[in-house]
Image (cartoon, rainbow, N blue to C red; front, side):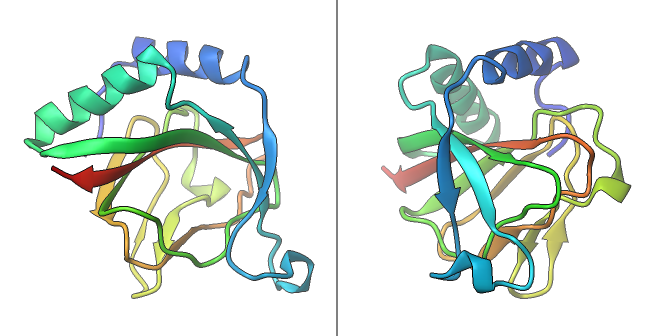
Length: 155
Protein backbone atom coordinates (compact mmCIF):
# COMPACT_ATOMS: atom_id res chain seq x y z
CA UNK A 1 0.00 0.00 0.00
CA UNK A 2 1.23 3.47 -0.84
CA UNK A 3 0.80 6.76 1.02
CA UNK A 4 -0.46 5.33 4.30
CA UNK A 5 1.50 8.07 6.09
CA UNK A 6 1.67 11.73 5.09
CA UNK A 7 4.77 13.41 3.67
CA UNK A 8 5.03 15.29 6.97
CA UNK A 9 5.13 12.07 9.00
CA UNK A 10 7.75 10.62 6.64
CA UNK A 11 9.79 13.82 7.01
CA UNK A 12 9.73 13.50 10.80
CA UNK A 13 10.81 9.84 10.47
CA UNK A 14 13.76 10.85 8.31
CA UNK A 15 14.79 13.49 10.87
CA UNK A 16 14.63 10.79 13.54
CA UNK A 17 16.63 8.40 11.34
CA UNK A 18 19.35 11.04 10.91
CA UNK A 19 19.86 10.99 14.70
CA UNK A 20 20.20 7.20 15.03
CA UNK A 21 23.31 5.25 16.00
CA UNK A 22 24.21 2.57 13.47
CA UNK A 23 25.71 -0.90 13.80
CA UNK A 24 27.42 -2.80 10.98
CA UNK A 25 25.36 -5.68 9.49
CA UNK A 26 25.58 -8.35 6.78
CA UNK A 27 22.91 -10.63 5.33
CA UNK A 28 22.83 -13.70 3.15
CA UNK A 29 26.21 -15.21 2.35
CA UNK A 30 28.50 -16.05 5.24
CA UNK A 31 31.42 -14.36 3.48
CA UNK A 32 29.87 -11.18 2.13
CA UNK A 33 33.10 -10.14 0.43
CA UNK A 34 32.76 -13.21 -1.83
CA UNK A 35 29.35 -12.08 -3.08
CA UNK A 36 29.00 -10.73 -6.59
CA UNK A 37 27.17 -7.73 -5.15
CA UNK A 38 28.04 -6.21 -1.78
CA UNK A 39 25.58 -7.05 0.97
CA UNK A 40 27.00 -4.97 3.78
CA UNK A 41 24.77 -2.43 5.46
CA UNK A 42 23.95 -0.78 8.79
CA UNK A 43 21.07 -1.21 11.21
CA UNK A 44 19.61 0.70 14.15
CA UNK A 45 17.22 -0.84 16.69
CA UNK A 46 13.90 1.02 17.06
CA UNK A 47 11.78 -1.39 19.14
CA UNK A 48 11.95 1.05 22.07
CA UNK A 49 10.84 4.13 20.09
CA UNK A 50 7.25 5.31 20.65
CA UNK A 51 7.10 6.59 17.07
CA UNK A 52 7.80 3.12 15.67
CA UNK A 53 5.30 1.49 18.03
CA UNK A 54 2.72 4.04 16.80
CA UNK A 55 3.53 3.30 13.14
CA UNK A 56 3.23 -0.44 13.77
CA UNK A 57 -0.16 -0.08 15.48
CA UNK A 58 -1.39 2.17 12.65
CA UNK A 59 -0.37 -0.37 10.01
CA UNK A 60 -1.99 -3.26 11.91
CA UNK A 61 -5.21 -1.26 12.33
CA UNK A 62 -5.33 -0.23 8.66
CA UNK A 63 -4.87 -3.84 7.43
CA UNK A 64 -6.78 -5.51 10.30
CA UNK A 65 -3.68 -7.51 11.31
CA UNK A 66 -3.62 -9.39 14.59
CA UNK A 67 0.14 -9.21 15.15
CA UNK A 68 2.53 -8.53 17.98
CA UNK A 69 5.82 -6.79 17.30
CA UNK A 70 8.87 -8.76 18.42
CA UNK A 71 11.46 -6.35 16.99
CA UNK A 72 11.73 -3.22 14.86
CA UNK A 73 14.70 -1.49 13.29
CA UNK A 74 15.86 0.71 10.43
CA UNK A 75 18.27 -0.59 7.80
CA UNK A 76 20.68 1.80 6.08
CA UNK A 77 22.10 0.74 2.71
CA UNK A 78 24.89 3.05 1.51
CA UNK A 79 25.32 3.65 -2.22
CA UNK A 80 26.36 0.48 -4.11
CA UNK A 81 25.26 -1.87 -1.32
CA UNK A 82 22.35 -4.28 -1.02
CA UNK A 83 21.26 -7.28 1.01
CA UNK A 84 21.82 -11.00 0.61
CA UNK A 85 19.03 -13.57 0.27
CA UNK A 86 17.48 -14.42 3.63
CA UNK A 87 14.28 -15.28 5.50
CA UNK A 88 13.17 -13.40 8.60
CA UNK A 89 12.35 -14.63 12.07
CA UNK A 90 8.73 -14.56 13.13
CA UNK A 91 5.53 -14.89 11.11
CA UNK A 92 5.06 -11.67 9.13
CA UNK A 93 7.48 -8.92 8.11
CA UNK A 94 6.32 -5.35 7.58
CA UNK A 95 8.48 -2.84 5.73
CA UNK A 96 8.03 0.91 5.36
CA UNK A 97 10.04 2.90 2.82
CA UNK A 98 10.33 6.44 4.26
CA UNK A 99 12.16 8.34 1.48
CA UNK A 100 9.90 10.41 -0.77
CA UNK A 101 12.73 11.49 -3.07
CA UNK A 102 13.37 7.97 -4.42
CA UNK A 103 13.52 7.37 -8.19
CA UNK A 104 13.11 3.96 -9.90
CA UNK A 105 16.59 4.44 -11.43
CA UNK A 106 18.02 4.18 -7.89
CA UNK A 107 17.03 0.50 -7.59
CA UNK A 108 16.74 -0.56 -3.97
CA UNK A 109 13.62 -2.70 -4.49
CA UNK A 110 12.76 -5.57 -2.17
CA UNK A 111 13.30 -8.66 -4.30
CA UNK A 112 11.75 -12.04 -3.60
CA UNK A 113 13.35 -15.34 -4.60
CA UNK A 114 10.26 -16.18 -6.70
CA UNK A 115 11.43 -13.35 -9.02
CA UNK A 116 8.82 -10.85 -7.87
CA UNK A 117 9.98 -7.52 -6.56
CA UNK A 118 8.43 -4.50 -4.93
CA UNK A 119 9.97 -1.22 -6.05
CA UNK A 120 11.06 1.27 -3.45
CA UNK A 121 8.54 4.10 -3.27
CA UNK A 122 8.41 6.73 -0.52
CA UNK A 123 5.63 5.90 1.94
CA UNK A 124 5.07 2.37 0.62
CA UNK A 125 4.18 -0.35 3.15
CA UNK A 126 5.07 -3.95 2.21
CA UNK A 127 3.66 -6.87 4.21
CA UNK A 128 4.81 -10.45 3.55
CA UNK A 129 5.31 -13.91 5.03
CA UNK A 130 8.58 -13.83 6.97
CA UNK A 131 9.57 -17.22 5.51
CA UNK A 132 9.71 -15.83 1.94
CA UNK A 133 13.32 -15.54 0.87
CA UNK A 134 14.07 -11.92 -0.02
CA UNK A 135 16.75 -9.25 -0.21
CA UNK A 136 17.29 -5.54 -0.73
CA UNK A 137 18.33 -4.79 -4.28
CA UNK A 138 21.57 -2.79 -4.67
CA UNK A 139 21.19 0.91 -3.90
CA UNK A 140 22.18 2.86 -7.02
CA UNK A 141 21.30 6.24 -5.49
CA UNK A 142 24.06 8.72 -4.61
CA UNK A 143 22.78 8.68 -1.01
CA UNK A 144 21.69 6.15 1.63
CA UNK A 145 18.59 3.98 1.24
CA UNK A 146 16.52 3.45 4.42
CA UNK A 147 13.83 0.90 5.24
CA UNK A 148 11.95 0.41 8.48
CA UNK A 149 11.21 -3.21 9.41
CA UNK A 150 8.93 -4.84 11.96
CA UNK A 151 9.29 -8.55 12.80
CA UNK A 152 6.05 -9.98 14.14
CA UNK A 153 4.25 -12.97 15.60
CA UNK A 154 0.60 -13.82 15.02
CA UNK A 155 -1.48 -13.40 18.18
